[in-house]
Image 1 (cartoon, one colour):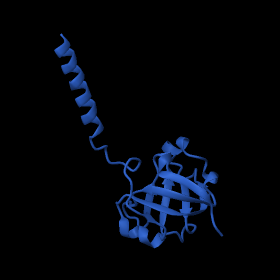
Image 2 (cartoon, one colour; image 1 turned 90 degrees about the vertical axis):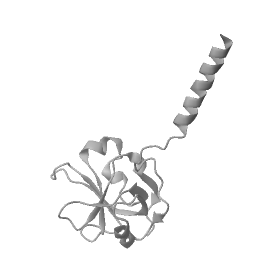
Image 3 (cartoon, helix red, strand yellow; image 1 turned 90 degrees about the horizontal axis):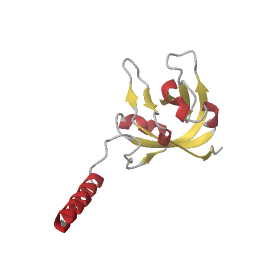
Image 4 (cartoon, one colour; image 1 turned 45 degrees about the vertical axis):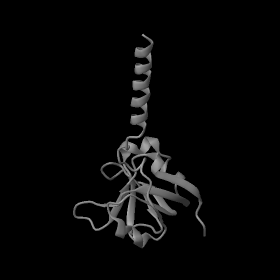
Length: 140
């Protein structure tokens, strides 16, 4: 009886150990990018890659007239002069701060810059609040 107990205990410990060593599913909240981009021109060189970008949100806006009612976070420069878009769609907004809370803040955004069909501009969609960290006010 004691042997069965120890065998069961060993088996449970082994299963827990192997469960802890499995690789988690790849998503932008678990993976860590290898570097942080601070030059907006560099984003285009990393389309589809998981990257982190640090910079100032010069304008944060909520556009309720567009389908999906997006929040746009313009980093480095305001639209149409910014080189990529950061978007939080309505379906995810409940988990994020209101748009104006990001305005004039230096942030770190982690995500994958992607190009939508028929669009030149890259965009990074935020699905999880762990993808954005406020680092402080923008430096003048």
